[in-house]
Length: 399
Image (cartoon, rainbow, N blue to C red):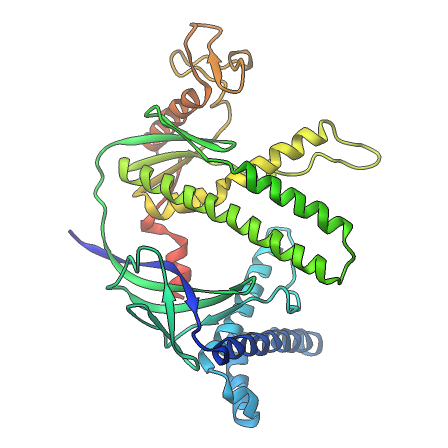
């Protein structure tokens, strides 16, 4: 079976064994933050004076001259410094793309609290439970289950500091066999906190009430504590740890469900949801205030906690073929007779057709409609198709 080269990111726990290594990591992080801000200032000054923008290659050439003239910069690994410049270049490319779409978001100067990662673009090696970073040498790493791609070639790495802990996200170039099409297609309906399939499965995200209550308690404590105090900083770290735990549980659930769907079906049909538009605030303005603001805010919170966008990205690179269809009327159309009526959706979970009397779980009925729409759109060639063949993430990783 032919194989293709794909890029997989593996997260390891970084375990520096000496205090000097911890201090070197912190010093390197602060040095790259200052380099990022200096490179951003150089781009701004160049555009103000000449009207032209600097590129990554221009600043990489300047970096070579700076390393010869400044011993402090020469002491830092060049692979990490180039990663910082490439990070700034990606920020500007994203800004220019948003400007074309009518948005904004100019790259900002980074403070100590928000700059928490180092990019290493070359010289990365992984051997067993060791990771080699240029300028740092061999570092101990740990991951539950080990490295899933021991034969993969490490391409780059990102070192992240999260509330006192260091993690290493290593990008591997792996050779994967082309997955065969088993001829089975499944429709997927994404609801708040759960995923339903046309095969009759409902996979729910297990909410941790205890973690949610703890996070709310820490938020109330932050509101009462004085800014700049040690107690407030301690509470902020506790809140960050709790929210990170909740995010990891959601991320793990998304990986399990997306892998299960990709293994079960060769074609996965999903709704082409615009999550950003769906989660806009209903507050309105002073002249025209919105309605049902509190209920809409609660719905937005549940949608964002489910993570529809990240779940969709996982499906795009795991499944062989992903078809995105228009979600309009999928939850109000009867899968048996095809009659669309808002009155058929009796409750959140109950669907009973007003025409033929067909009754089913509302999400399972919607998943069947999504599958039918995807099959029809695929037959006439009018659908959006994604998957490992034309994945955007592989193109960005290769660049």
